[in-house]
Length: 382
Image (cartoon, rainbow, N blue to C red; front, side, top):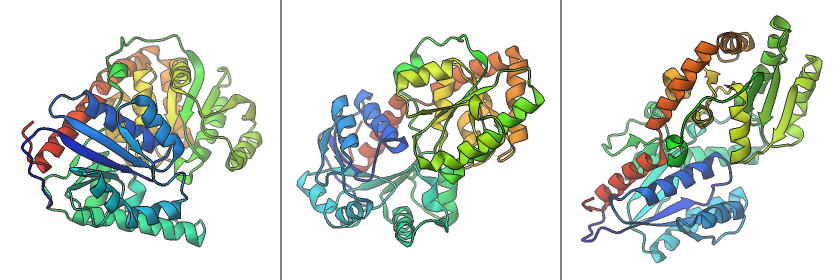
């Protein structure tokens, strides 16, 4: 195990975010950086190495880390080549004390390296669909993630579910390996929590066209709700990127005669997210695979109970503050929705539980946990 002995408390951490783009990965990275900036255990200086211009701008705008962009908007192949051939030299020039890489292990780095695993797909078989080039890239990413389990000075996991998946692949014996939940912004957790005036027929979801999101079940659920409770004006708002990939789902909605009940919002900002969740009966997530269900956490913070599938990390994410439905069963999801609709008291109970649960998941806590790990690897007393 690589160790760095230091006499002073300052630690320079270089974040390998070359493959990080806006979305879940960037949200996690910002949470790490803000959490570290808010902790007072040890002096952390952070430098982020990225490629995507949007990632560079998001970090620079926050003013919480120095940003280096040696490869501007490189393709997936160019990014991987750069990481494998140039990153170690860049880390050396920056005089890093620790490198934190997201989802991948980088060889030839001399200082301690922590790998943060936030993509459970890295520990699952490559899907057969996609081009040969895409599948080759997936195999390479999966190989790098497995190498991290064997060689990293510490592996940190976004959820216990990912750690369990990793354990099934490689039996690690590193006592520093652990789960650190990134969580929510502290101001969101500590804000005055109260119930909101919501539309009892409005449902909300945050999704993508990826197959594991199971949007077919989501749309069939709307049709089921209309069928069994036609007296309610059911409406579903979908927050997701636009594109031709939504065409099959829109055709399905038309065939089930619920197209006019679905609003396709595209990408939305945090204020819009707050507004939509606060106005909704509940969040519905039919996704079958999530490393950690952050959308459920965000929903709880806005007084909107989440309904999620009963698989992967979803039960771990929502605890007793969310409802579980059988994965892939549009009828079971519809039953959970109706249960909340018909029992305001039940919904109120889940809202209250959600306010309590989010206190366990916050950026400041994650920053303290990472600072403790950095201090251990650098022999610094915090």
